[in-house]
Structures are given as structure tokens and as C-alpha cells.
Length: 183
View 1: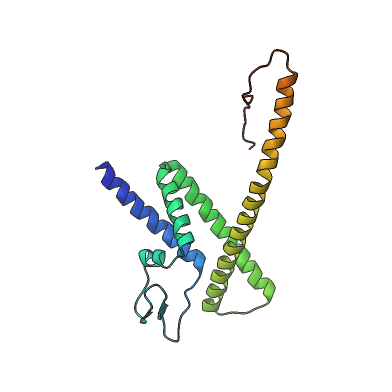
View 2: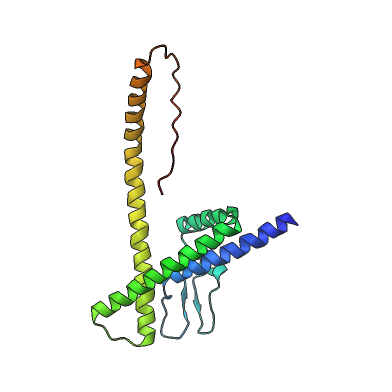
């Protein structure tokens, strides 16, 4: 029974993440007909009535995007209900902030668009904004990864010098350090 519950939970988590990801991707590119377009995964044209579900969108992701998606889904499944609730609330707040920023950007642009064009503008703003945030996060992580070895060496030499200056110190182990997160 527990294994079946995990599979159901995984399916639900994947559908939640897929729907969130599809929102971030903005509107799909359409050809001249409503709802139609070219499906790059199957190399087929979709007719006007066909809709793509979360499962189909998943297979249209790049391998890197699929891997990130799986990693997020696994993280989601390891969370307890309170953590999931908190994450949903944070997501809703962030989404509303981005929506407000998109509306402010549209107002500042001086454009007067009909509702459909406004929705497309907002979707594109969100898509590009998330892309920028992902790029900045990757740059930050790369820079941090560059600087961590220097930090490690600096701390190692600092604590080795302390250890060697302490009378009777013969251990080569690293001193225990308590790290308390700053809130």
C-alpha cells in the first residue's frame, strides 16, 4: 500500500511541477489555426482541438530540463505536508509579485493592448524573467564554486596555524566548528 501511495504522490507532484513549468514557459507558439502547431517531440502537426497535457509537455523538455524537473519532484516527495504547504504559499506570493511587475512594466511601456495581448505580454515577461533569474543563479553558483576552494584553503591554513601554536596539540584533525544559520 505504501509503494502505491508513493507512486500516486509522485504522479501528483509531477503534474503540479509540469503545470507550474508550463506556466513559466508562456504561451505555446501557434500556427495560423487556433490551438494548432508543430509538435517538435513527435515531428507532427497538432490540429486545432488537440491540447498538450503535463505528461506530453514533460517529454518536450530538454534532457537538462527533465533532469532538473525530476530532481525537484523528488525533493517535493521528500517534503512533509507542512513544507509542501509553505512552498506552495511562497510560490503563490512570488508568482503574484512577478504578475504585478509584469503589469507595471506594461503600464510603463505605454502600450494599450487588448486582454489577449496583455495575457501574452505577461506570459512572455514571466518566461523571460524566469530565464534571467535562472541565468543569474547559475552565474552565482559558478562564482561560488570558484571561490570555495580558496576559502577552504584559507580556513585550513588559519586553523592549522592555531592548532600548531596550541601547546601539546598533536592531532591533525580539523577543529569542530558550530555553524548556526543567520535568519
